[in-house]
Image 1 (spheres, rainbow, N blue to C red):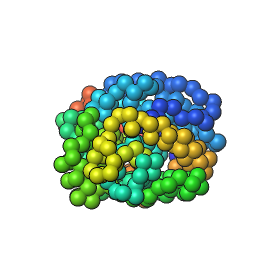
Image 2: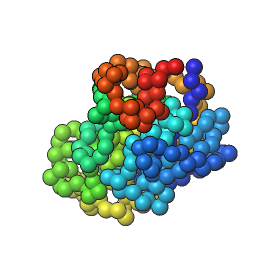
Image 3: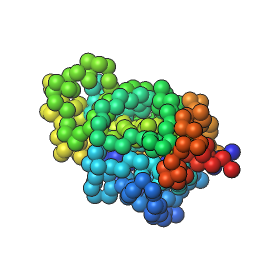
Image 4: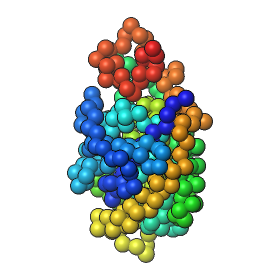
Length: 292
């Protein structure tokens, strides 16, 4: 069995995680470049945790400037087995009001400027993404939300746009008519990279606004997003603390196979693989590339 280590990536408004004990800041070098910040390692209860602010402390990085590959790589190197992504988002549903949490289970990727895979020329791999969220981890988050009396919904689709601009009215109406539930700028390629790294993954989408479709609400702006995100941060701290206190000591195998995603995924013959790329993949794909 593998020891469970819980990773948390904090989005807008979540730049720290109160309640971590025995905190140590751990800079971890990644062959994929600089991560958003140093990892804050410690424990909550008996659970080892690793926290990373996605935008960096001080919110230095826009969604397009985040080094998603480095962020996931350092989580893998830190031993993270289960990763909770906390992201601010806009809502396309009347009942998903600001302050509401949506535990999404599907994503639509509308980004276009980001490196979205660890693999490529010299080592090609295709991982399954039909079910990008681990249902076991999602259920644990939902149970914690119930215990902490946090308004939430289980399930939903998040459309991830490039940003950093907010949507036009036409885009907002289109996404709503297509049946998407929430909109954000950071879930992709993060979820794809976590799957390639065989890290169990789930998103907590914190609603901060109604995007710009709602006729009775002003168009989304930074001031409104920041105000609600700050209010959500205390709920996130309670939620993560509850999850960590109840988290199993050993990693639970994911029923959709996220922790075995590379089984049979690599297409490139061993003799044709690029040694330089293989070296960079030592943490992400070491289980299948170097089974010894």
